[in-house]
Amino acid sequence: MRILQFLILAFFCYQTECKQLYPAILVPGDGGARIEGKLNKTSPGPFPLCSEMTDDYYTLWVELTSLLPIVLECFVDNFRLVYNNKTHKTSYPNGVDIRIPNFGDTDTVEWLSRQHISSKLGYYATLVTSLTQWGYVRNKSVRGAPYDFRKAPNELDEYYMNLTRLIEETYAINDNTKVVIIAHSLGNLVILYFLNHKPQEWKDKYIRSFITLAAPWGGSVKTLRMLASGDNVNILTMKALKARPVQRSMTSSAFLMPSDQFWNRSEVLIQTPIRNYTVADYKQFFADLNYNDGYLMREDTENLVNPLRSPNVEVHCLYGTGFPTAGSYIYSEGQWPDEQPKPLYDDGDRTVNIRSLQGCLPWKRLQRQPFYFKAFSGIAHMDILKHTDVINHLKEILLNS
Ligand SMILES: *[C@@H]1O[C@H](CO)[C@@H](O)[C@H](O)[C@H]1NC(C)=O
Ligand SMILES: *[C@@H]1O[C@H](CO)[C@@H](O)[C@H](O)[C@H]1NC(C)=O
Ligand SMILES: *[C@@H]1O[C@H](CO)[C@@H](O)[C@H](O)[C@H]1NC(C)=O
Ligand SMILES: *[C@@H]1O[C@H](CO)[C@@H](O)[C@H](O)[C@H]1NC(C)=O
Ligand SMILES: *[C@@H]1O[C@H](CO)[C@@H](O)[C@H](O)[C@H]1NC(C)=O
Ligand SMILES: *[C@@H]1O[C@H](CO)[C@@H](O)[C@H](O)[C@H]1NC(C)=O
Image (cartoon, rainbow, N blue to C red):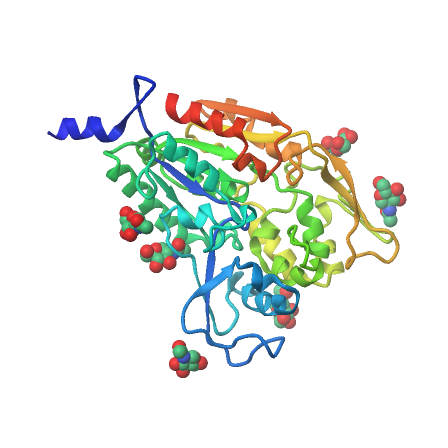
C-alpha cells in the first residue's frame, strides 16, 4: 500500500514516460511579494488624508490605488523602514505592524495584488500555471516562500527558520522527495546566504537543485541611481523623488549596490561635475547625499554573500542578456542628486549588468555538485519569469532531472 502510494504521488507520467516530480519552492525578488500592514498610529503622518488606524491588515504592497499621487505620501510613510544606527537593525514606523501573508502558498508570489487583474501585477503566475499543466499541485508540490524584500539577509532570521520548515514539510508531504528552489533576482542572494549557512548533510538530504533566474550576484549599478535620485519603478504616476525615502530606507538597496568584488576602483560608476564615485567611494557617496545611515547599511550588508561562495547544491544559473543596462551614470550641472542622470550603457538584462549575472560561473570549478548555466539573448529581467523559452527550459530541467 505504502509503495503504491509512493508510485502514485511521486511519479508523474508524461508522454508515456514516468518521471519523478521534484516539488518546487518559489522565492521572489525585490518587490515580488505581497506585504500587509495594520495601522494604529498616533498621528496621521505627512498628509491629513492618511489613515491613522485600520481595523485589520490591508495590502500595503501593492495596491495600485495607494500609489496615486496624493496618497502616495501615506504609503511612503507606512512602508519605509526605520534604521537604528546603534543596533544596525531596522524596525517599522511607530504604529505600523507588518506581515507577509500566506507563507507557503503560491498566491502571494503569483500575484502582487489581491485582485488578479492587471498582468503587470502578475509575478510567478505564468510559471505556476505552466507547472500545474506539468502535474504540479499548488500549495503541495509548488509552494511560495515570500519574504520582506525590503530587508537584507542579516535581518531575515525568522524567514530562514520558516523557510527551513517549509522545505522540510514540502519534502515530507511529497513522499520524501527533494525540493527544487527557484528564485528570481534579489531572491537568489537571499537563498545563497541561506544555503551558505546550512550544513551540507541538510542540503544533500533536502535540496534537489537551485534554479537561479536573473540573479544580481554582484549587485547592479542601477541601485546607485535609485539611492541617489529615487526610482519610479515604472509606475508613471509615481515621482521618483517621492519614492526615494522608502528606497533609501530598505537595507536590501544597500545590499544590492555594486560589489567591489565585481567592479574595480578605477571604474567610475557615478559622475558628477564635482566628484566621481567608484566602489571605493561609498562613504563619500552617502556623505554627499547627506544620508550616513546608508553607508552603515552598506557596511552591514556588503559581505553577506560577497565574495561569493558556491552553494554546493546542483545549480542552474539562467539569465538574460543583450539589453542596454546602465553601466554608469552622468549627472550634469545642477542634477545631482535630485534629478535623473543620463546612463551610459553596458550589456545586461536591462536591470542587472552582465558581469553580475555571470557571477555564478566560477562555481563550475568551485563545487563538486553539477553546475549548469544558460544565457538567453533578448530576455529582460522581468520577462525571464514568463518567456516561453525560459518556461520550456525549466520544464526540461524539472521533468528530466
Ligand atoms: C493602539 O495603540 C495604543 C497604544 O499606543 C493602545 O492602547 C491601543 O489599544 C491600540 N489599539 C488597537 C486597536 O490595537
Ligand atoms: C546615529 O544617529 C544619531 C541620530 O540621528 C546621530 O546623532 C549619530 O551621529 C549617528 N551615529 C552614527 C555612528 O552615525
Ligand atoms: C496550504 O497548505 C497549508 C499547509 O500545508 C495549509 O495550512 C493552508 O491552509 C493551505 N492553503 C490553501 C489555500 O490551500
Ligand atoms: C513565520 O511563520 C510564522 C508562523 O507561521 C508566522 O507567524 C510569521 O509571520 C512568519 N515569519 C516570516 C518572517 O515569514
Ligand atoms: C579596472 O577596470 C577597467 C575597465 O574595465 C580596466 O581597464 C582595468 O584594467 C581594471 N583595473 C584593474 C586594476 O583591474
Ligand atoms: C570624472 O570621470 C570622468 C570620466 O572618467 C573624467 O573625465 C572627469 O574628469 C572626472 N571628474 C572628476 C571631478 O574627477
